[in-house]
Image (cartoon, rainbow, N blue to C red):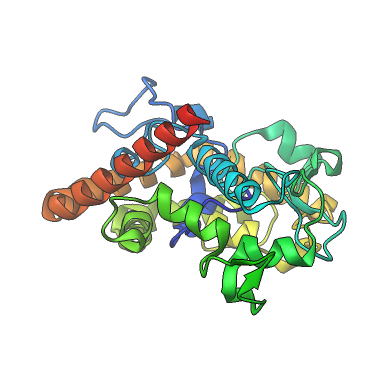
Length: 314
């Protein structure tokens, strides 16, 4: 799970697809073994090839694209604030009253994990020591700075230090610069994730996926654990008593279920079949809506170009 802060709209994420099988996959194309009908044999995350829609995602060329976009936005906003007269304004400020309270972002494997050692030890959770505090690195903004940073939308005064506060704030100005040339910002970010979610549901209804999930489910039962419809259901079982940070109680039953989950996915090639069907569905959708996909990708390239231009000038 990756927690992102800032960097503009995030759009609709096909979380179900990621949680279902792909967590832990690094996106690197695989040249691994396949069955006679072309289905990849998946025992580890690295065995999963890229899906066709990966080519149309913002992170297709750079896994740190969101982080880079956020950095460019923060740098532009900082320059705006300093031009306004706040000479020591930090690049990544904390909001007024937030102090040192941190969010917690943890890189975790979900129901799609293939690491048996992790499953045996942490179940569907993770090592608490891996929790990384994520908070803005800079100091807390003053109320006056916050009004300029965020603009009139926060309900502050329209004039500060004898100057009119930008209606959209310095942060909004930065965002506008980074998305310059993009006609439909929401479509740029949301189109592919929305299609991903729709296509995931279509793949789940395919008889090949239903059949392999039924075999996976029975396999888990045969190993002495509860019957689940999908690995996602096993991952989300309330019996794991997830805390606010998302970690689990890591009980003996949870750990046993997580191990059975992986063993059964390997035994029945659940992930390989799922990938094969979803890949087929995605290719057909791209062929039907190619102009829309290409339009979204061109807009994403515009954003990338803007980010590179901004960072080169900083």
